[in-house]
Image (tube, rainbow, N blue to C red):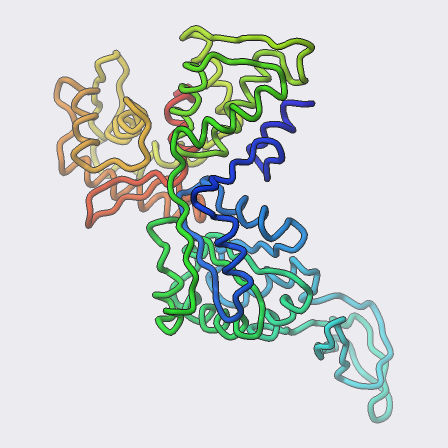
Length: 418
């Protein structure tokens, strides 16, 4: 057996899947999608296994997965669905003789799908008969509830990942059409992060009482350990328990990240296939550091990191340079990122905790409160404007806490060389 089959950070695990049976997630999702008239809303931290849960219950071939990233209008959303089920938006025709300016095609489900012919060249002939060249056959629709009903008739369940990235006005319209499609029998699952879990209902209050909510909590340490406990015996590798504990700690509640670390460990140890005899393995501190650095190749966030570290162009004078206790130096953006990466890995930092970390890192003349807040606001703005759906960092101005939605970004800060 190969290590990359046992540990699969990128897709549904076959051998190391942890059902978290006490939460009954699979059964709750199955109940939700088989209850006619209900929409299922799944929320949880990033990289916590929300999509894997859907795939394990619905099945890879029955799940029609559409992401909310980049959806600023309804047309884009419907286009994404049509592309998934291979209904084209248009096709070019070099030349054609037609008897009508409008044709009708039929799908297997019996829906009437109009094909609108827009002639770009001259048309000649008598009453409904003509020839043309360079025509464009454009497919319009179906959209909305009609398309969603068609999806259900074809045996698909629609899963809308990152629903919270869709603009608010579009969310409201989609929620209304989801409600009608669910009533007609199309299974619909809406996936979002924990702190945006009520977006579906807020988009359409009439959905209250029609949404079955499943909240996926952060993974506990013992739940992450199950991945190692299931996987390593299949390869006849036996890491020391303290080493597995370290893997768990650096995974920051993410099963995907735990899978990635375990896979990189196998590669570094040269055990990418099942060993002939069981072998115990332990690493010293230096080897552990090398392993975690190597794993950043599976968690590369360099683009996001560079954008946040650079910050906006300074106006007037250059930013002040701060000197850290380890001899390194940088501006306020550098110091904040170092503070996030220091001490125990956590995904949510209240401002007071962040400020304390900064003062520990910069013993003499650390950044002041106003400067820290302004930098955090600029960091949040840069992520929103330049990274699109890659929301690796969020600053909440009202609650004054910094949220790291993506555990991979925190891992990259901690172990990449910078």
